[in-house]
Structure formats: structure tokens, C-alpha cells
Length: 90
Image (cartoon, rainbow, N blue to C red; front, side, top):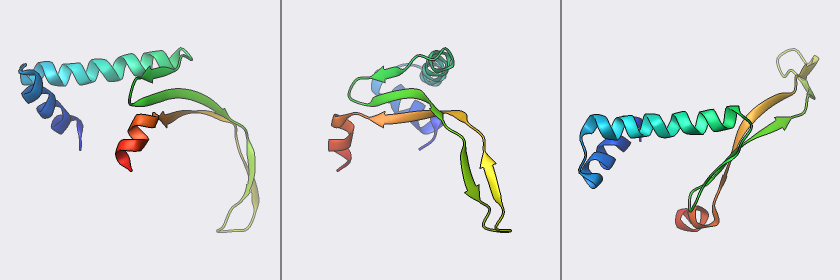
């Protein structure tokens, strides 16, 4: 499912204009990205939590040439589904 398909569902369920539903999704994504960029976690009840975690550097072996290399430390976004979402998916 892509953003257009999601906006179509929102538009039909909320009885709003198509561009308003699409704009709502853009705004939601903007708020989540802005909060994560400030180091804040985003908790959406009955859905899950988005948060930034720091991955440590690690040493790996390149499978093509068998040489050791270092993958630098980096920040990544982690999503932790809520118990309710996990239950629904099962």
C-alpha cells in the first residue's frame, strides 16, 4: 500500500477532499521526522513507537574479497510495534 492508496481510504472514511487526506499524511510524516530529528521518540497509541538508536561500529568480513572492514557507527530509526498491533497481526 502506498501513500496515494492510504489517502484514498482516509478521504472516503472521513468524508474530506482528496487533497486534504493527502496533505494529512504529509503533515503526519513531517511531524514524525521533525520529532525524530530532534532526538525525541514518537509514540502512537495502539500502533507503536519510533525512536532513534545509535548503532556501534562493527568489524565485518567482505564476502567478495574476504577482507576485514569496519562499518562506522550511525544513528538509525527503530520502530517497536505496540502489543495491540502485534496481537492483530498474529
